[in-house]
Structures are given as C-alpha cells and as structure tokens.
Length: 530
Image (cartoon, rainbow, N blue to C red; front, side, top):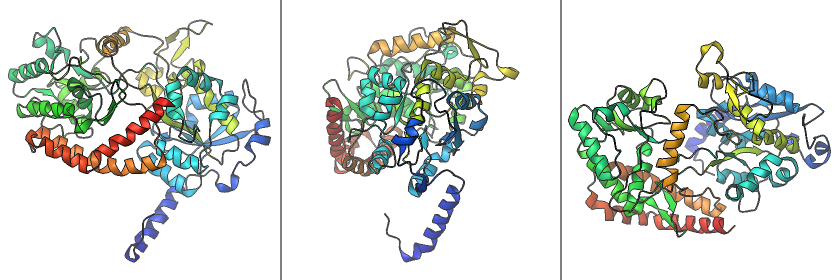
C-alpha cells in the first residue's frame, strides 16, 4: 500500500471514482453470491458425462479480453456452446489493450466473474489470489470432471509441473500448442532479392551473413539489409542472432548441465551487441530500427528495400499471396561456438482459464472448458462450427475440406467473427492444420530442417516462484531490464564503446544480476525435481 500524502487526497479520491466508474459496467456477482456449497447441491445438478452439462438453467459470467471485432454473444462458436452445454454465458469482456488494467481493478473490487478466460494470469497472480482463496484449486475438479484436460496433462508432465503452484494446487489451465515450433516469429529472406544477387546458398556463419548483407547494400545505398521497429526494439532479431554466439534467449536460459544463465551478463551477449554494432556502423542494420513503427518497416519491406526481416510469414510483410520463394532464415554460427543454438517454443502458455470463488458451479465450469481440449472442441474453437468454413469429408472425422468463405471475404477476417480464438490465448489444445496446401507443407519443412532437426530446444521452462522469490525478482527485474535495454541500444549504436563492457557487467552485478540468476537456479532445481 502507498502512503497517501495530504496534498494527494483529492487526486486519490478522483482516481477511486474513476475506478468505480470503470467497474460499474462489469455486472455479475459480488461477495454476496459466494458458492459456499459448491460441492453439495450444485454438484448434484451437473452431469458428469455427455451433454448438456446441466439440466436446469445455469448462467456463468466470463471476463475475457475482446478484440473488438464481433460481440461474443453473436459468434457461432459461443452460440453452439450454449446449445451443447445448456449453460448460458454472461459476458464481462474488456478491450484487449486495456484488459490488464480492468483485470487488476476487478481483483481489487471483490466483484469477480465466475470465470477468468484467456486472462493472461501471471504466475504471481495465480499464487497471490489462489492463496487468498479468490481463485479455486482445479486439480480435483480435473480428476473428476475433465477427462480431456486430465489426459493432456498426463501426456505432458512438464506442463503439469509448470502449472502447479508451490502449494501443490493448479489454479489455471494452459493453452497447449504442440505443433508450433517457433520461439518467436522467424526471420525471412526476400527471395526476389536473393535471385537478383544470384544467391543460392544461405549464409551458415555470421561472416557469411555479413557478406550477404553488405552485398545488398553495395548494390544500392538506399537498400536496407536488415530492419526492425521501435515497438519491439530488436526483439525480432535478438533471439536469432544471439544463438550465433551461444545464448538461447535474451534474459534466462538453462544449459545442458542444468545451469541457469543470465544472458545479458554473458560473453555471448557481448558477441551479439558487438556484431550488431558492426552492422550498424556499416549501415547494414536499419538506423530507424529504434524509432520507426511496424507499419513503416513493412512499407520498406513491401517496396523490396529490405533483404532480411521478421514476421509470422514473409508474405504478410511483402504483400501478395503466400509464396515458397522467400526462404526462412537459417540460424548462423560465429567462431565462438561449434554450432548455432536455436530456441524453440515451449508448446504452451499459462493462465488461460481460472474459476473464482463466487462461481456457483465449478463442476459445470470445468466440464464446459474441457470440451475445448477434445478433438471436436479443438476444431470448433479453432475454425468455427462445422459447415461454415469447413466440413468433415466422411463419418470418420479424420479429414476435412475447406468451404468457400461467405461473401468472398478473407478467410482469417471471417474466422475472427465466428470464434473468440483470434488474437487471444484461449484455453484449448490448438490442433495441427488438418489440410496442408503446398505453402503450409513448405513452411513445415523449413521449420523442420532449419530449426527442429538442428537441436532447437526450449530455453527455460515456465515455472512458479515462491511469493518471497517473486517479490524479490520483480524488484530486481525492473531495474535490470531497464538498464540492459538502454545499454544494448548504446552498444549497438556506438553511443557506448564495447570497451565499456566490463564496467557494464559490474554495474549489473551491483544491481543484483547474480542474485537474479541465483533465485531462478533455485526455482529451476525445484521444478526439475518436482
């Protein structure tokens, strides 16, 4: 709690009034509707198998981030869920950009929704509100009422470890993405430019990458070999280039000997900033990378000015249709390592579904979300109900075919109107693409040959800290992250000479980098042995 000085009383009152105004539209139940008898009468009204889930009317309130494209109540997926389960949903959504603020206000108010959905609950939030009884433990409910979730956790013991708090309870469900290998959006080469440069073999080392970028720059001084944007401050480049010097990730990674490393203080990070400083000095790295918007960067890419860039797929920046002519970046190695290290996606995200203590039927709620982890539920939540954008080809339900998009709209734009699973992390298992066209097969092969077959690994697991550890890490990270970001930009742009590296590392140590690393080593060892 902050100490309120007298001269700030008026502003505090004003802030409180504004907070209450924000909350006034939440609706739902407050403390007075606490489900103290959940395991009694409410349980007896829930069907443990089959559908509907309930035979008597039940309304559950959901708080979720909203993309602002379509009201959830008008989405066919939510309408199908209502019909299937017999549960009516009351929506207490907030715009995605301001959702975290709304979530914090709701936790502070005591006026909780029955369900927090795609709420990006942090592990600190789960631990805090779980220990206070605001979020309910889910493990017993999973065992009794959620066979699909139970099976998913049995199949993925590391996920179960990662979502289990130090007190032994599970307070939220994960989104599981078994088919997504990328730790971060890949980098892509502009294939048209490669042809103009008569390049057939992609660079395998940092020196070869430098030579290629320089070749493109020498062709025309207006060319931009490599570019980023201000919103991500080189984050799209950092992971891939860090790997050339032996570091898997920008903050923490664990090596083959289970030793935790704090990346910004390591020689690998020095190699990375030294290399980017070389690119910067020779105008091979876009000098507007720290100031331009993503749209401005994409305009350059679309104008064929940029050779190497990051996006989900290359065509999303280049424009036009999906193409197999723009190759994925193949991770390069420096002379500091024998081979490039490659980070891969851990395959799940946490904090996507939680049940509050005011929920009138946790049993029905866990059965409701369990459908999203079934094969039928996965497909419906990912692509919409059968018959709109797709259909099964036969009764075996093993293959599908795509249907024409109504009104000739873009398929993804239309999908965003029929399912909430667009732009947010819904609790579910994300299915593999059931119909792979030439482009999808090509991307899969690029990922397999350039990343997975070359030893890509998860840099650091998702794990819980104790409350004391979390409080200490939060304080340390705030100062460390700010300082690292400032110094990275200075090293790269030459405002700070690389000769100042040792002084920089000593400053990190004074700010607590060794303690930061130590806390995570203890937490990792606990996770590893759990």
